[in-house]
Amino acid sequence: MKNIAVVGVGYVGLVTGACLADLGNRVTCLDISQERIENLKKGILPIFEPGLEEVVRRNVKAGRLWFTTSYADAINGGSGMQPAEFAFIAVGTPSAVDGAADLEHVRAAAESIADVVDHPLVIVNKSTVPVGTGDWVADIVKTKQKQSISFSVVSNPEFLREGSAIHDFMNPDRVVLGSLNREAAEKVAQLHLPLRTTLVITDLRTAEMIKYASNAFLATKISFINEIANICEELGADVKEVATGMGFDKRIGRAFLDAGLGYGGSCFPKDVLALAHMAEVKGRHPQLLQAVMDINGDQRRSILRKVSALLGGELKGKTVGLLGLAFKPNTDDMRDAPSIDLARWLTEQGAKVKGYDPVSMTAAASMMPAGMKFAEDPYELAADCDAIILVTEWNEFKQLDLERVRQSMKTPVLVDGRNVYDSEQMRALGFTYRGIGRGYNDRQ
Ligand SMILES: NC(=O)c1ccc[n+]([C@@H]2O[C@H](COP(=O)([O-])OP(=O)(O)OC[C@H]3O[C@@H](n4cnc5c(N)ncnc54)[C@H](O)[C@@H]3O)[C@@H](O)[C@H]2O)c1
Image 1 (cartoon, rainbow, N blue to C red):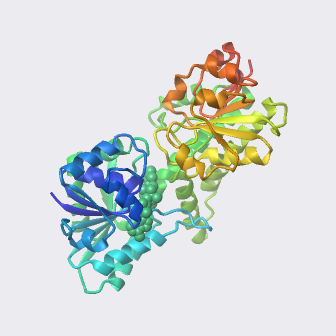
Image 2: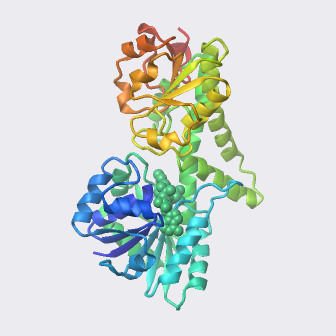
């Protein structure tokens, strides 16, 4: 049993803290948000993540999981908490205006740790941070600490996916650990031994780069298949079948080859942008990354053109329903969700917008244009709609009573931004249906 502090209790921090506690460690989760911590102490979670509430409850009950806003207590022990041997930093690193990762939260976390630490500590950076940040964190701690305490910095990038975060944390494809101090990396490796996974131990900068390169590659797969989808649409091939046919090739793989509205969320958009920025700062021209971002932006815009064409070229005065708002299923995360752009553009073109999502409507409310209406369920959403765009492929949308949906609509136009439905079936039900890159299937 190790004593661990986790700094930042968002998607990554809370999952990391809860899972490390579940592996038998004593974990103190720290956040600067008083409200988050007070709620967590009452068992109220700041995010929706399947299975997380149960893991948090179990470990709080077992006395292995604590919540605090006090750096002194989390790092040095106090108020029932133990001095931490490891401090995981899992604060946000959003995009700054120039596209670089904004490291203000990382800086603040490093300074706060340095300010209180009174014993040797391994600082583990879980936030996605530009290459070189580990060295920068080490400099901050060294210059800010009040007494000379030995410490090491280890980069341990996180690869979990929202929506399956607990499973991903507990069953990782690999754990990456980077440090200039091998002994410190091995100490962090020990924490991960129960996961029985491959450990990749590198230097600090290489570990940081593995995270960016991995996310950029996955985003590239998505933009690649979207480009293929657009060509399929012109030439009459069906991109779903194309992806299946490609995916059997082990060198390619089927994952992340789903054509649709493109990627969104808190990671891919900002991470591809930040990687391109890192390259540009060094005088490089990251043309592939630029293309990946361009295609992704175009994909959102092209769906609106499709809806507009099906409604006679005019969106003004039309009612359009967005089925699904979260950036992907099984999360309430709305960061960079395609639904935000779609709602804004539709409103700008004079359409009335309605939205429905099983879990993200509270999170979405403040991000959507004024006047947008939220429906109680998919059937209320469909009422009087001139068109529906399926934005998020929640499982519950796969089982809808589509006959009922069509009957409620003013005109039965459904544009499927995630290729969830079967074209033939939709036409048989009387919909004017379009997917993404479905070729002849979309034209019959
Ligand atoms: N969300 C994901 O799926 C995911 C996956 C892999 C990696 N990441 C990376 O992990 C990092 C965290 O992402 P997230 O989605 O969990 O972020 P988040 O915004 O959900 O949570 C960040 C938390 O940090 C807290 N915080 C900010 N400054 C702080 C400080 N100085 N001290 C203590 N707490 C502070 C915030 O209050 C918030 O609760 C990012 O770098 C992200 O790129 C995220």
